[in-house]
Length: 336
Image (cartoon, rainbow, N blue to C red; front, side, top):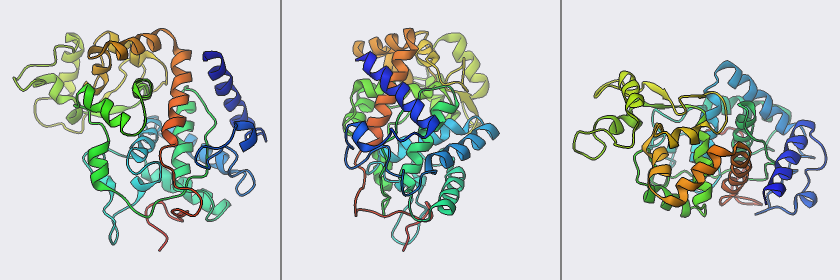
């Protein structure tokens, strides 16, 4: 299985770099839900090149943007499927998902999405969906920070609606219990392996003080810190995150290599140095998940292979295809 996954990941990297003709539906083994990697080969052959170029410029300007774009894709797919609903601003009957608890003052990168969409519209108007744009940007964010590449099945269309309640209720929160987090993944058709592998995206990026303060001061409601938090690491975090105030102060999700996509995130969990409760519970709560953490900490290639598989799986959640939805001209609003 690992050998097969290795071949697919290397094959996808070769195709994405050379834009070769090998990424058509027949060679991929058929599309899932009418999605396949060569969807835009005729209608917008430069689509992936354009997305990659704009993302590369954004990440070069601000390394943190890679994690932000990857997070947008995750938060989009967990609400109504991967349909670009997160990108919609409030208008008419639409109440934006950007104001939900997981996204408010937190989700970012929408200006980069606007830049990508403008470049795509200039090249091939009304062709590439915002949902596909997000999926490609997530893959490119991985590659640009040293992570794996994969062939992205394409052909999603954009929703004409958003779901504020879905965003509040479906996306795991930093202080959720292990069982709640796993439940929110399984509700989407993702399993324990997907949960642990996809959480590995926290090897890049930062988190706000408000998302981990509870672990430092009042984890169990008794005024005490989380017993699974390594003491010297906790002392360091308290300097950035006081008991009150400083909600927007940032700390690295991976203290050792916040700008590099690698497997040190899992090594941190074994040392009780996961920043968020939702990170650390992967190692401290269940034997099955802790074994996966150990496996990925020991074998970065295995982690990369599974991450690529799980990203493809997540990207295929309930896509709109065919005549469903639309291809938005502006990712922030529906066409009419």
